Length: 201
Image (tube, rainbow, N blue to C red; front, side):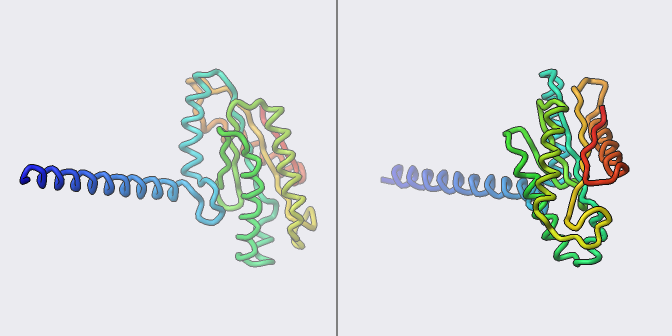
């Protein structure tokens, strides 16, 4: 009888430890999810993007396939915030984040808030032509939201400029080079009048 009681106690202790371990793992998983998500838009944040790009860069280098980036900036967003207020500005950011995230359809794609009114989309194993087509669809989808923007210098609705870059990763190229190319392409899109898509080879 004493042995049976000991075994029963041992089983209960083991079950309790298993429950506590499962609960702890669940909490860690939730904390990791929260730390990788942008609080406002609820898509991936900059930290998650940086980590994802680093991993994808290594994977694509081993596979010898291209990685494409689309960097998106809302045109004259400061003027929008100044005119409509930060609450409406936040709503605008959320709607645009949703649109961009909707275009990250494949399992390996990732849409993230890059900072402020900038968003970024990683497209593994994607050629420049396909990335440009997707960027143009995103630009059009944002315009079709028809979010009023009376103080914009180019349109009566909210628009966005997008820069696209594609590279095949190699050991002597850091992933930051791809981001710099996408940023340079975005700058070119702004210089050419905004509400445009530009790319850097």
